[in-house]
Length: 247
Image (cartoon, rainbow, N blue to C red; front, side, top):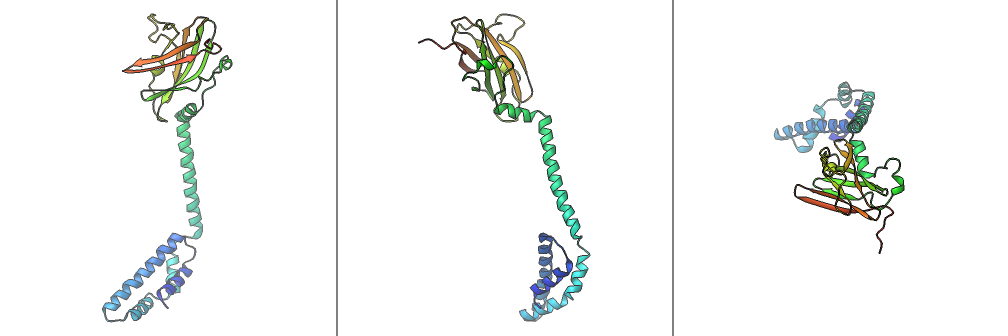
C-alpha cells in the first residue's frame, strides 16, 4: 500500500469534511509518512523500502481514520458555520446601509445625481440652465431652477463637495452674488443682510441649498451669478426664462 492509498483509506473513515479540511488532513498524513521515510533512508533503507515501512508504521488506516473522526466536527456543524458566515455578511451590509442612510449620506449622494424638483411654481420656468455645475474651490455649485416675474428673478442652488461624502463649505452658497444686468443686488447696503442676494439657505454636512433673488427690469434678458472671494473669481450669465435677447 503506497502513501496515496493510505491517505485515501484514512479519509474514507473520517467522514464528511470540507474541501479545505480534507486537503489539510491529507497533507498532514503525507508529511508524517515523508518524515518517517527520510529517517529510514538515513538508516540504510532503500527509498521504496523506506516508504513501505513508513506507511506500515502509521498503523491501520481504518483505525487511524476512526480515531481522527472524533477530532472533527459533524458535517451539520460545517453547514451551520457556513450559514452563520453568510448571515454575518448580510447583517454587515445591512448595518452599513443603515449607517449611510441615517447619516444623510445616502440622500446626499442622490442629491448629487439628480437635479431636485423645485417647489410649486417653478415647473413652468424649465430652461436649459438647470443642471449647470460650477466648480468653486473644493466644492461644486449646481443651478437647480430659474424663475422670473416682471420685477424679480430667483435662482435655486445646491452645493456639494467635489468628492462624494465630502463635507461642503457651509457658507459657500451664501457668499455668491446674484446681479441684474446693471450689476445691482437686491439687499446690497442693508446692515442685516451680510450676503446681498441670498434669501434662504439650509442643508446638511454633505449638501447645502440656497435661493438668491434680484430685481430686474422688463427688458432684462439675463442675470449674473458671481463668486469673488479668496482669490477666485467665477461668473456665469443665466438667461431669464421667456426673455430671449432680441437680434
